[in-house]
Length: 122
Image (tube, rainbow, N blue to C red; front, top):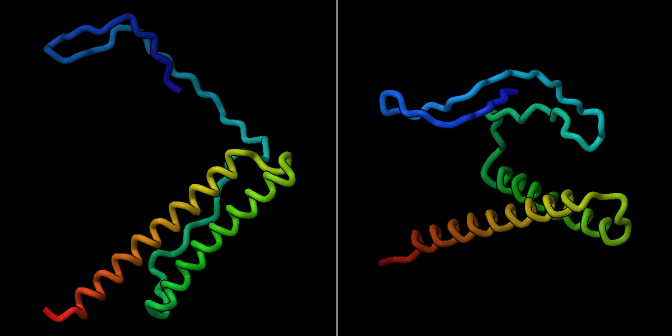
């Protein structure tokens, strides 16, 4: 971590420069608590191809549904067992589910408008 001690700003050659000292301190991050973020699993392979559009759409909707189910589960746990879940986990799960549902609705509306414009004879 870089620590700066600034005393002011000078403008040599018309460019601002901080006047002061700089020190570097290496502090190891300790992740001893189970609630700390742990390294996740490897991301899915972007080269993976699904069987078709219907399979890809079904998989995406399944992920949206799982986010919604997790949000509902955490909300219920927060109500019935408040000590078993952190408040920020409930809020984050609810926002992820809300965002996924809004994105799904937006994409669906766009697909419907595109289909209607293609099938509407003018």
